[in-house]
Image (cartoon, rainbow, N blue to C red; front, side, top):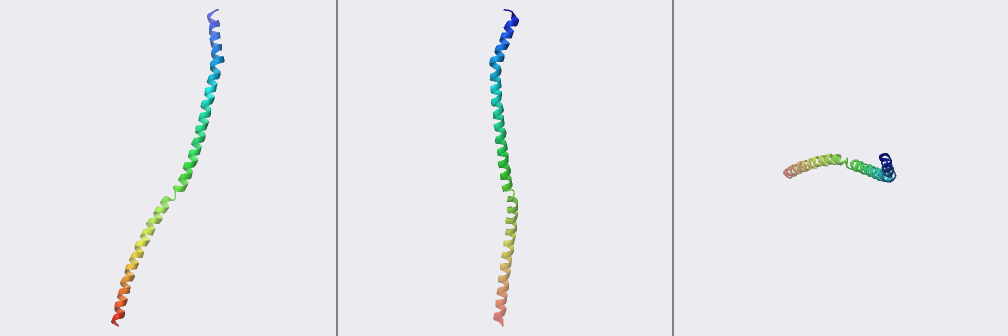
Length: 95
């Protein structure tokens, strides 16, 4: 048997035995990549949902800030009305 025949036999064995294994492994890698891609899409969709639900936090902070100012103003009005009430009471007692 010549060297060429030996090389052809080795090549044939590699082609028949190793190539199907390589194809099987590549198919597994491709399936894993598809699964990862699907999981990434699900994570993106979940992240977008969370983002849409939390975008109103800034508006809520603005509302809290405005409500604080309103309460301060109401407190001032209450103080001034107590002062006015006291002044009117004093005036009514003087008459």
